[in-house]
Length: 254
Image (cartoon, rainbow, N blue to C red):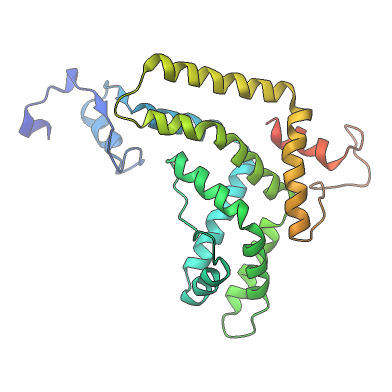
């Protein structure tokens, strides 16, 4: 490309708008260009910058695990025509499960909301598949593992917390993808999002109660009890606390 277009490496930058493969460690477009123009600055679009910021800041392991479980559930049903047909039957009236996009957070928000709204149906289906006695023994075993994973309190709290945070950023991401935007207006929106997040952190006890109520409703639907992870008879470094306070400290405020 540099030879054909007579581009000067010392004065070239890297723009990644509409680029499908950008950050791969070996074959990503940015990686290849960096070999030629080592001092060039990468200039992603505003929406992609937002997506990268959210992705890099999402370092809570239980949230990442919950997203991984959601992806595994999606792949599990799509890997078999029999399981996929059963899912379509049970989701009658609901939209079908979509693939989770790693970088497009608009799609991720829609996917998380969809999964949250159909979690009872999915849990029931996994329970049915886990009792299959045909030759597909591996499917029964994996269905049991996935059912236990999505039914854990930590996974459900992570799912609800992630959905709640994405609700703040989804509109901002949509606006940043427009061809023409008002810089002052977008800056104000970004500051508003930051202000809301700080306020939620300051009043975590009050705000988390709303999320915990939703978590309790989901547990009732799938007939499970809310429990604290890794419970011991006596905590050594802090007094015994309720599941709600435990989840605020170990998940929500992280």
